[in-house]
Length: 289
Image 1 (tube, rainbow, N blue to C red):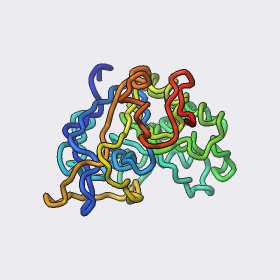
Image 2: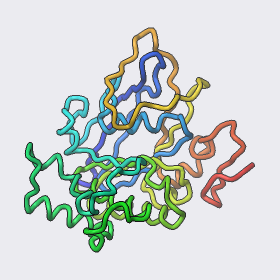
Image 3: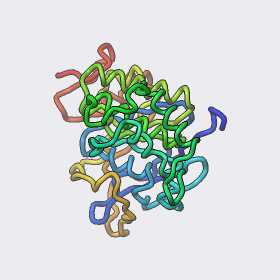
Image 4: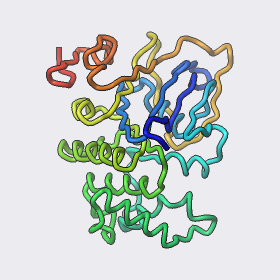
């Protein structure tokens, strides 16, 4: 696929939940090979809702999400798993698995009904561990990893899944400052070297501005109350709102390069309206007012 051809497309996408109205309405955006997109916004703004739709786990009320020209809502779970891989904030309950075994879990869309690993599967796992710098940790128990090492192992699992799109929900949430920068740098390099389209939600504004190719800002579009906690990121939902439930959307999406959205009044400076913080272009981060 050409680097100029979008891998992921959002076309006139409307998302919502029954009884709660629309969260987003008429979103259109594209993601190309080699791009690392940072998804930024306040808690409860709809970032997890959008990620669920991009994973195919939330059926749009209107519009579509397509990967390599295939609409995710028309595919079954195994077909989606060959197109989109997911890394969540949940700490994997896999302490009894070695790092190699944990990464090998990513091969499930490719192993057939019996789940047996071929030489090609084992090679894909080995390459994924090398890509994240864990090739010497293959036999180590996952329970004995640091938080940063465990996150690398989860990224290796997603790499072993061999999908054109990778989604990460707060991948730096439990990491120290050095590990946060290291993780985001790794994702930037993987997007470029493997021509993957990677989207991550994060609250680490400063590193995201330095390392992301583009930003997707989830901003308030109306004064409605924020969303309550959304259902599990992995829980499929075919939620469609009834016509009587339609109302002004909660959020809108603004996209651009870090430089563009740092300078625009409608970009980062307006991300947290009514809050006692302001965006400083000089610091590349939000500071107390």
